[in-house]
Length: 151
Image 1 (tube, helix red, strand yellow):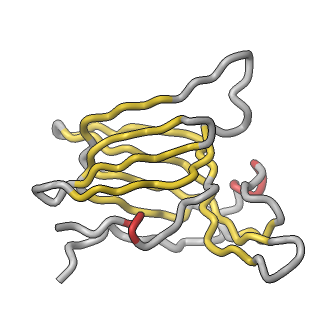
Image 2 (spheres, helix red, strand yellow; image 1 turned 60 degrees about the horizontal axis):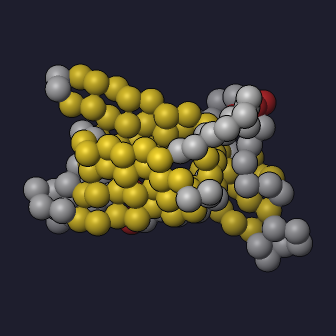
């Protein structure tokens, strides 16, 4: 059975800016462009957060169901805000993911593994998201590789 990044990282209040699919050799990967909150500093007043732009990737996705509703002329500067990601292990080293977002929205799918890649530098902020200029700062090269099966 593969390990999955959502078992070791929290994605609560991570903003999703974009969603992309990469298809290759009859396999599809899903990527979510997020502001990943790496640390909550709530012993300070007001609370501060250490956040960094990141890509949350899921390998070999199937059974995809997306429920996102937008009305009006704008979609704001983000696609959604994650409340939690539920994970249910399935047979054959796959898992069912449910990305639950604010507003009763969700993205559900099966995948075989997940990866978190930081795409920019850390920012200490009093809000739980990054501005466009903060997201564009390529100060960090931190990367987590696809998780391997537990020994």
